[in-house]
Image 1 (tube, rainbow, N blue to C red):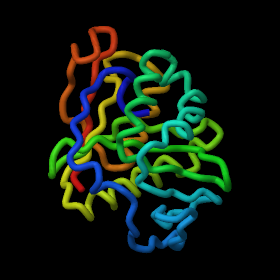
Image 2: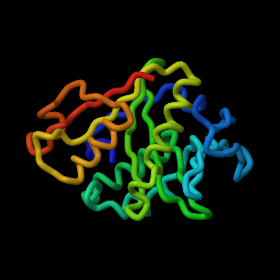
Image 3: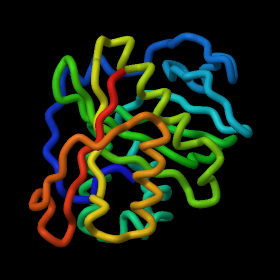
Length: 198
């Protein structure tokens, strides 16, 4: 539910820095390592726990992305996302043994990062799972001195009710429109860049 599939360039700053490490307790839950070396954010919401960041998690993210054809219905673009997720820091939302959502970051510099791709299973929409994923990423980035988080999504110039919900989600989390790029993804898919100070 981040940017449109298949249109991106990835610059990673020291991926090793983004491997799991413990983070502070959150008021909604307690730290609990579900696996050796897996940091959790301690965020729990209706039984959902957010963990990470991890690398090489495309196999567990793929079913989530496939459950969202309204956003990720272009096969070639979805396949590119699966390749990207392998090498990018990814947070996972888990309900018991099931992965119900994820968020993958691209770190552009020591000061800025981007939500590269994010998805939450439809049955978990409007239950706070997406917000918990974004907050976990924000905390992790702040700990590393990153000052800005951005996301690219479909501009309101192209009417689409699903992406209207996506933009509203990011507005509610404090992101604001920064710039439109009418040709970045082609004239049929104008891009809106939204940004938030951390």
